Length: 452
Image (cartoon, rainbow, N blue to C red; front, side, top):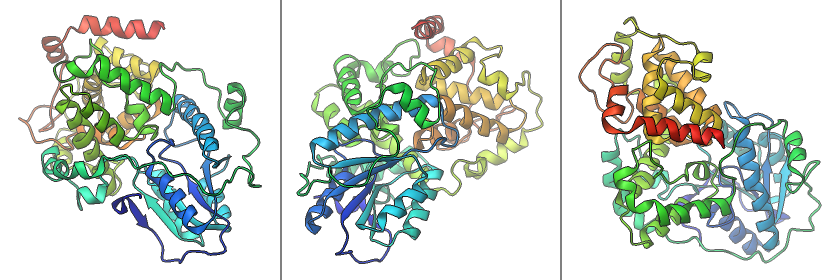
């Protein structure tokens, strides 16, 4: 049974006995393996004696989202369709806004289930759909280990405050959610996908989705690729993760963030497999459980979390005090986007993200700090950093991205010694990189990636 802590009923409508199916609107958890929202939908359908239909709505453009992200997502959807068919569950792809398509098909549904999304656009969709649907609506928190509102009932201001709450209860939420067999098949239902199937040739997919992909993708999307990445990380990189994860010249990071961003792998599954490996894993689990779920806490409990105004008051005040400070270098957005700055390390990081969809985690902190330093207005710097990250990074538009950019501007951090431009916000510079790491090797590594 799906854990009740993950489930929220969003309206007071009773079960519709005349409903022909349970509709699962999949949008944040694009997987069939250990997906609590899917399993809850099957549970309800079996109890009502009706089939399950899974629906995904594909829109031409998602705010501040790159073409590479669409391809990654589509590759995951292709696997989902095949996997659902094996379970006698029909997957329906609609090329329409969720706020239009989902209420339409709820008219014949016993109930609507959806996985909780955290981006602003997803939150807006969910609210509109809940108001428009004339059947019971349930939301399932499927992309965190500990349900956000179980972990805390307020915005936490540091990893330390959340850690005390979440670590002791995590063990209650890491068990597999099981796999329920659908009693009734929905494969023969009359509801059809719009115009094309996920299994069409990739050029047709691109055309149908409204874009022509030309960028580079180091790894394909989908739950099989996610599990392969996890297995490779455990076998080859986990043991040295704690000591080497911050070194941009090395590759000891997990590589799982894009898969987590699209819900193509369960964080609870990652937690268990890492723990079961017997290798040193405390540093990685700190990132997966505490730091990642601190980001979810931030976006869930913070109004307008994507805006500069979401920063702590002390950070905004100190940055505003320094707004008129003279900058040695000032760049336009287009110059940053094209990696045309005086800083070779920053340029390498921006190129890595723009071309491959990935940037080393430590360099992303440096990258964000420098945008603040090289922009005349801290609010503009915040907006530009978020836009660049969301457009070019495969894990953009994710709670981790919003919280990561906000950290560069003082969120989830403490005041430091005051200095020009940064005020009390933590400062980073190129000399610090050179003291800690072999930055020539980092640039060489990026150049090798760009040559692939």
